[in-house]
Image (cartoon, rainbow, N blue to C red):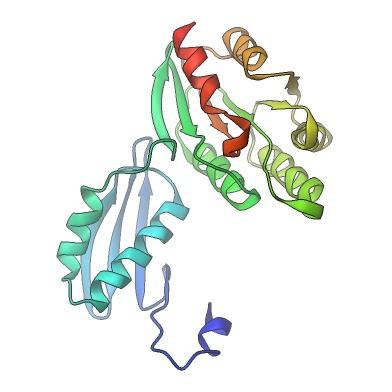
Length: 227
């Protein structure tokens, strides 16, 4: 960010966690959202997002910076965040058969996949952490490395089980196995993924479902709920 800011003549407002012109401090995550303090200059305000995730706080700070630039008070910005609603399929939480399901099916790329995995890794969970991960589209020549980076992240973040698919998504499963995830399976289609979930997921577990729009990962949640 600092390097990019040096390349423009425009005024620059830097945003970040614990640093920047507009900063979030004292983050506290729970299963439903994130509480934090916004600092802008010498002013501070308590804020809350109705969605978990450090990366979601970073996105929110950009909105706050726009508001402050347009003359909106910091308190008004904080109130706006508190009452914000998210697009369907963005870290949306549901309970299916006693299992907490995290619906992040809106879209996917390696960075957002890893960010969603970190959100689930930070959640207090009584049971196991399970991820159902579909293919990420439009990565071109970076597809294998991108999918492998997700499998590696899932292992490093301590996921107990991974369900993935064929095609380039198989690289997620392969890398997760190599990095130590013991329970890794590949489904032929969304219906088979639902069958695997019905056998695998138990009350107290948390299940992340994520993939590109072309993977139609939302069908897994719909079929699982209807089963």
